Length: 363
Image (cartoon, rainbow, N blue to C red):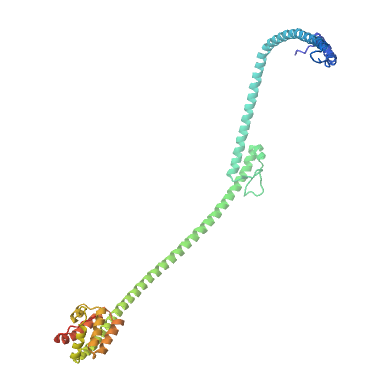
């Protein structure tokens, strides 16, 4: 194989040495001309000296620029020739290189494809094996696969990947058997627990039904006893009401008999003159008279009290009877009793006063 090697162009290097001579002279020029200065407008000699020095430096600069252009012109020409030649050679090489690159690329793509397929197949195979372990309740702790029913057995992920199919199937057959025993034990234990819970629930339900039945029977019996008690209490209450009515009626009848007897007795011995004199005094008031008839037809506690008091003032003989009436009105008897008693009193004396044409005024 032939390659192009760099070629040294000695003539160009020799020509560049001319610049080295000028570079050496620059140090001398610097020492010679940099101290120069013009001391004012009247320093003509200084001005001339500075001008001559500048023109000398300019000459160096112009020579450098001229030589640079000569050298670069040759270099540009050479560069153009080299570029054209290199471009031509490259155009001949590129088709060959492209063909070889494509052949190489086809090979590498195929190698990569096969590699990917192999990795995919291995990954799928590994995942299938792992899934089979997971189905029988193996777990992964970040380093190993293990289970709760195989004791200290731990499986490394690399072993799962690298073990042969025959060895893996043999291992799986053993683990599957252990797993079935484990599940059978769990199912039996769960069945025992479920049966125990079912029996306990049935016993609890039976006990609850028994308690509910007893409670219902007790409630029925309690309701029956309450009903009997209420009926008995109602009978006793009704009986007491009837007894109270009978006793009250007996007392009323007895009292009326006694009072009627006393009133009639008092009326027979009333002093007519004294009553008439008292009435004259009573009727001198400007108040509206309350007759015996008014009291009898429209009795009230106030009117009855006043009536009985005036009756006491008019007739001294029934004083004890009247006081007894006043006391009973205030403390014991209700309005109906008062009305009956005052009607009796009025009725008993009505004839007495009517015969004498007496009008009884009550305040």
